[in-house]
Image 1 (tube, rainbow, N blue to C red):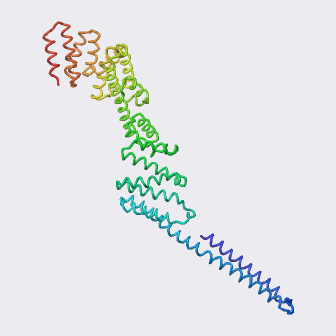
Image 2 (image 1 turned 45 degrees about the horizontal axis):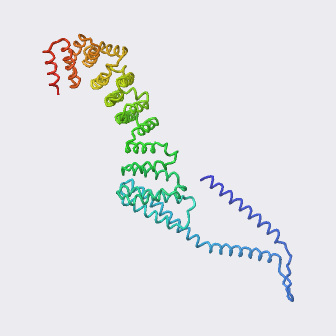
Image 3 (image 1 turned 90 degrees about the vertical axis):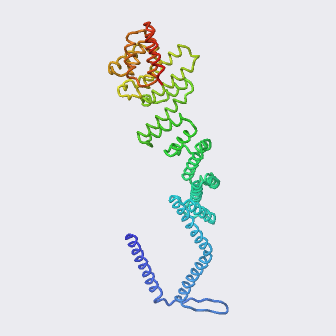
Length: 438
């Protein structure tokens, strides 16, 4: 402000000096000037001093200049009036958009819709696009606010009408960012309407750059979950977690839940293997996912009767391979996870090799009083016809197991061992105990 004042003062000084110089020059030229100007207009003759003629010329020039400026100003009045009117309309339109936004944030949706409509009416009244103002962007924002308020009022007809105008390509050229925002809003509303096909169609219209933003990825995740595309939802969730859109715990929980859904939705063992191979190494080390995948694998292998014993053995070996990453964590597993682990290892006991037997026996040595390891090692001994050791371990396990299914199989195995010994009374007693378990 100070510099501007200084520049104005300097300009005034220069003008004053210029005018003083001109006054001095005129005084020097006209002070002692005795020249005359003679005009001949037959048969007349006019004599006038040179100073008078000079003054008349200057006065004529000034009058002509003022007359031309006055005429130009007179012709400018209609345009200035139109510009003033457009400026008032422009201000009313901007005020209407701001009011609509304020009402929308305050939850006054009827007033927001009315203000947005008033803004659109004012924008239609403009005779030309104002300088420095993006009329297309204002029009798009007004339609978007009107659609947002209509959506809040559950007026889908008005919402679709305003949204259709906001998504027009003519407006998109003038306001690409606002157009992307309108597309994201349209996707969200399609999700709220439970219309995954429309939401996917809107997603395809989103530009590539905008599709990589976190907001677009969140909407893509919601569309995938709505559409039942668990694999796509899992991929998007990993990407969002990588970009820190979720907290580490929330991202891990979402990934775990989606991976569990993907494993449960597998319809055959090959499809289950494809799902498993697409999991990351960190996901393959989650006990919940490993146990769920192994359990689903045994269910699917039991249904595939055409695979034969070799196919069953190969599938069992693959399932045991899935379990290996979590084996170092068995000492830290809770009772429920350990019970599930025993249940998924037991079906593969007939196909386990030396390393796995060593692991199971080592687990029993580390926790000799654990009924689950007693049961598992006892079943392994039973399948390998080690009757004495199997009877001892299964008898110990029968006192500690609380799972009805495992306890029922324990008594049946004890009945089989008693039958091998020829003890019919023990066979009957063990079968009665198995039958009495709910």
